[in-house]
Image (cartoon, rainbow, N blue to C red; front, side, top):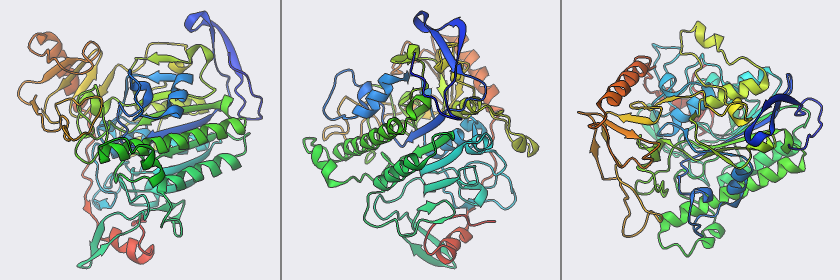
Length: 520
């Protein structure tokens, strides 16, 4: 079993139970009142083949020793699912709802529908309680660093509005890694260019943007949080790196490390992931240096599959498809649990039960000793939290995942099977080295039409989705259609609105050229 580090409030007090865990070892769980530190790392656009532990044949192109080490010390989550693109995944994580019950749009954060004061905004509806609010009520210090992409319209939609004590990051899908500029906006018939997207707790991040690489700023901020955090207070740190989302930018010294790669896009992408791996190494060392490691649960996941379309740079080999698609390469993502909180009997294992991003909300609430129920959302007639507690799985108490189905919108995973019922783009596969000069587009142009007769795959026996078994398994197909229809009937799809001119006006006139909340 792991060493017990005695701290005041966050000591991981072990309750030894009579039931045996894996390999005959007794498992342990936090005793009532014990509140571990929680570090949630949500990597952006991270391809399945862009991490070392997914490479059966090692390659010097993929240099992720810190990610690999963390995974080896923890539990590889081999069937961990996210939405096919950014904002719904982040909305799901922060709200504890599956995307179908919170947000399935990658809308710009400046939209608004004045007819709906609860849900007429991008991302998470106003009256849903954020993960950080739940943990803050349990005495946690809560910090967000990096990408948000879960709402901006009002102060309630920002990270601090969702319960974070501090935030340092940006609201949109991406920004420039050096200037933090993002796009243009218009109001009063004038186009305003290069609005900056960098926010620090309750105002623009003035003075931070300019010449420093954005992930360097975020990494330093993470280290500042860890170095100053009182270890007798439970910590929730949500670190959402910009890497490896576009624009593909990285310091020259990291590009030089990968100069042997002959494709510029692939070179920069691998260099960016390597940069992030170094940040993760620093984070891990800080936890050890502060004697916080033994009391910490670390969850690492991608927000979607890697983008294999031109300019994206990622590779999901051997999975089919990528970001923006419901093929496995778009929704089955790199993920693992690590940290000293993981029992010794569970470390080094690969777990193949289903896990969804929404489940971490319920898991963290359970560890913090708070109810996941969202009374505020219930009062507003919003969907309930449907994340499930995964701590019994991580601790070895129960090796059967409580999650058996994952709606993809459109499509469904249920048991061993997956149904798709639309025209499916990105229907091809890449190779171990992608993108490259001979295959710059991978399977992006391949199309499989599942709109007339749904396509059915056994994703446990056929993880690369090469054989459509719909014709040979009519009973299973019928059952899957019924299950997807039942899920689809519960879909939450409010009218979010349109781009709101006041968002641009507020950015220019109130915040001095920075994006921020534009409604009270």
